[in-house]
Image 1 (spheres, rainbow, N blue to C red):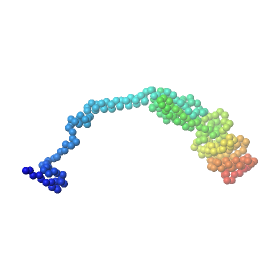
Image 2: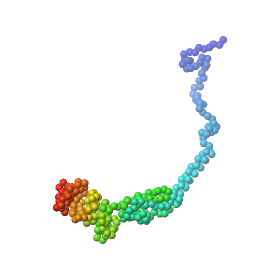
Image 3: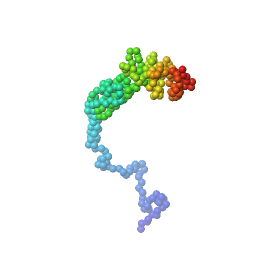
Length: 273
């Protein structure tokens, strides 16, 4: 009669059942687990390794992609398919749109991407009376040029001709007759880098409209000695370009009194003579 070995506490701790002997690997032997391993044939069938046809197809796709990009680049850069067809001009007043187009000299049918908008703007800026230029592309085939013309604040007699002067002291367009609505700048010289010119143009830009419309000429020997002459012959000693609002208020009160010269160069101590 077979005996059944009782389960000892050591068996219970090791999880062994009575009567079952565990097999131990010989000392020094390597134990390999086959869990989770699949034969090479199974891996190939499930697509773990890319097949030769898939690799070839990927290469063809890459080649075709590169050729497509190169072809598109050629069409955009070296053909007239997306070339210039029209040049639109905006913002002109004294200038005409045709004058701007001629100065811009945009090559007809040139590929839009090959156009240098900076060079086009530079050519338009050479036109007298142009202060700013913006050149942009309007796809598929139009170049848009927006110009900002200079605004005259007075005119200057060079001794040979009359020239308009803008708020920055730039002498630009020639005129045949003195403009009736602009004062004459009676200065030794007029230039953007001249302090006296800048003081005069700044003062003219600060004057109240009602007063500015009455000014017929401006003199100045220094940036702090701007003097205005009105249409009725009265003289206003404005001084420098500081405190324009306060000077305008003081002058309005002074001009209610009789006088020919009104000095508001120091608005704290105005005088009439």
